[in-house]
Image (tube, rainbow over all chains, first blue to last red; front, side, top):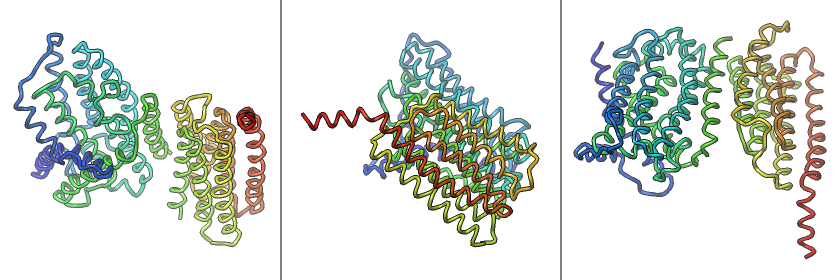
Length: 303
Length: 212
């Protein structure tokens, strides 16, 4: 392990809370408003960490453990990605399934916590979250299958590293399709428009936000931070697939990752300014389209 | 040149998915127009010799498929004030899934077909997939206009298939373009007929309003 890997990881974890801020700022700029500062989430996190926690008497241990499980699973998943473009800090054969599983574990913990509160709103949010996840996971696995077939490797560390640059000339169409599919997943998994609207504050229209209505203080800070890191993780996946960075030096690759994340946040902001949220029954349609894109990429490589 | 034509063939499949996935009539027509433009580029990209025959084919395709027919369809939905949403027999999500299966099947089947060698390995499967997608749209959508778009997609698939033989059998492809003109007339007939039948009550209601 070289020094660049931990440095890249730490810098990604540090800039992660700025990404939703960049997206929101882009959106408000395009819609002619001033908008919250880019660093708003840092201020929110600092405020929440200093506050106390309120637990409802209905809740059990599940509710208290969930934010920790969520944050831990997202952080472990971050270890599996080759953030500096070469190798991951902690990778093994088949870790792409572990990556999908860790993200699923975090979501499962949050869904259980939402159900644990006994509130009907949060139960509804949990149900919606699982609906989105059920359609998003096939797309994620198909997109990862494209990477497996293109590079012939079963580890995220190697398949997003040097072999990917070698696979680009042969499998460019499939990789572009996988990248597009992953970007659609980024929108879905991070509760952005057109799947969910992070700006909505009406319980009946929320998906992701409604699950965490009962969380407060440091717990809420953990959830918000884990959400920002998850955004950065999917952004790093998209950047790694679309730009094979192994041909550059590790420091340049790390800088490209951070710049790529900022670009993705801006693109998300542009989408949020340009599109309305999809109606609830159209969401499967969007995610099936993402699966179809990735599946088409798989078919092209199987030929 | 094969890279470019492969890319164009991929775009043809993506527009197939687009037609299957959209709910708005205008968007469906736009997808069909885009597909027509891609086909025009494809016919030139597949035969890099720039013979007047191929060039004429490309320009003819571009004019008919990308401009004339879509403009006509757009006019039809505007004048008939057809509701924007199409009402499919099977849902959009399901038809996307069926379309994906169709693409997989056509890739699997085309490897076993005893065909003369074509310029790129993608040509035949994409042609088959486009034909099947056209059939799906033609059979599962209720609105007459969407069915016409389905017919156009189906015809585009046949056109892609014909492109593989364009140099050997030039007359066949020209017949294909002629068929396009026929499709134009055919569309006109269907649109007028269906709109007369479906929206007759609507126009007569306006007439009674005028009388009142």
